[in-house]
Length: 344
Image (cartoon, rainbow, N blue to C red; front, side, top):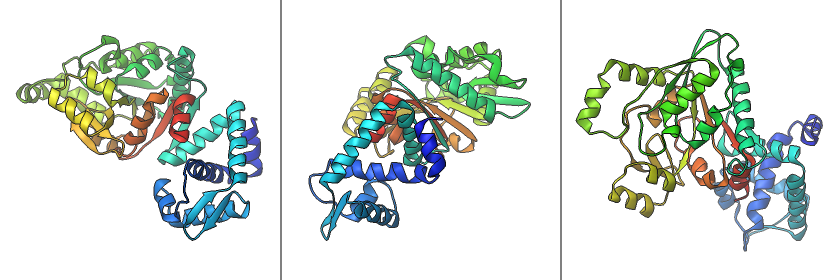
């Protein structure tokens, strides 16, 4: 057992207490002035009652100082936070367990798995992430027929390379892409990634080889084509969805958007994109790119949503994405992204 697990066995409520208290301490550590309880509750997405309880505990330990005009971290609190951060930085088992619990609470996730390292610098992180995803699929998928819908992107393309048949355990699995193709690298298209995972898993595959960007009339006609219609309907009823989230600047370059759309993305400070929707840091839709395939609203009907992301550059995008989806599901990410989300 790692250190964190041993402490958890002695203090089961640690999962609920530590992340919230640390997040409050971190927030106060970068504030020049005192902050009111209500402002703290809003900033950390907590109820005022919960915030009051947190402050009372930390006040009793001389971590924070409370006056009429607000709350402030004490010198002792600053030193304590620095010591905790040092332990989290040096003890990998402790930091990963903490990150998982903190992200789970932060995004209200069903579960979260954080892999050590930075996927943008270490290919081995993608391999570890792939094995972890497959272990989860082995638990989630039911006996008999299962459908796994797959988006595209570099992250899923890397993860798909390391898929193996073992997680199927006799189940029949069918992979289906969630969209048509768009400009850019062929290897990261939804159809290519879905086909790769199917091949590596020795599973079935439903192709979806049509351009994503079409006129309204052409799209309407294609939607009546039996193979296209089947792929879309099957993806909407998938047992599981594997997806990734892109940053707005990168996805704006990949998609064939107009100069006006590009300006709007910039002017309204879009930070991320998923399912053709560009959104700002509050999860508000900036523009919606017309697409044939699964829409972001369809996620409400898919029971198991697994989001796979890596790299600190996607921290804002994933935070905003979780403000847009009907239910957040399960997150797989690397340590670099986890740190960026929680520490800023």
